[in-house]
Length: 220
Image (cartoon, rainbow, N blue to C red):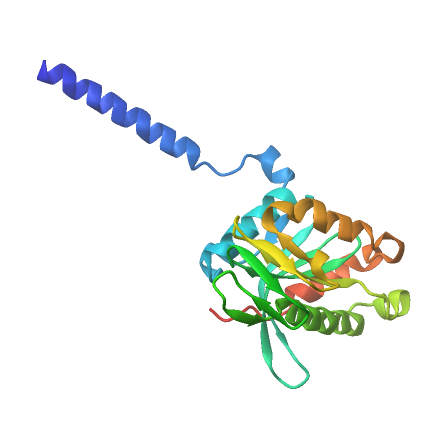
């Protein structure tokens, strides 16, 4: 009967709504305990879908003791403001990460990359390398004990994250191991972090976290 059909439809609608609510639930306590800490204001501060995807992947895959600071700004000695997508504080090292949503095969060298559509771009490794060096200098100047403890030792790495699943780097560059597909981030970044264990930031980590929190946010 029509009445019976209406009741069945309402029951199905109620069940569908229940499934939707279940799928949208926030992570439970156990899941949160296994996540890296993401330092951000709101999802709306991410400029691109690729940045949102990368932030989510970092949060869910990197070790829970690690901290990912999103969307900061560095100012060069000459007064130029440079946007920084992510700064990752690992166990032994700090990483500056630039996200790129470029698709397909990417060729190039130390200076220029050629995208799958033929467009030429300056190598983003050069930018993150400069930012990494600048950040290392700033941290040496501001974090108590770091300058005397690590001196000029290398402890900040620059990374380029390719967030599109189709991306494939064929770049010829000695730093090509710092160009990472999103799916490979966990294993690669953890390996790079472990490589710094002999000259670790561990003793200065709290001071580094505090200094990075004080960096200005990237303008919206």
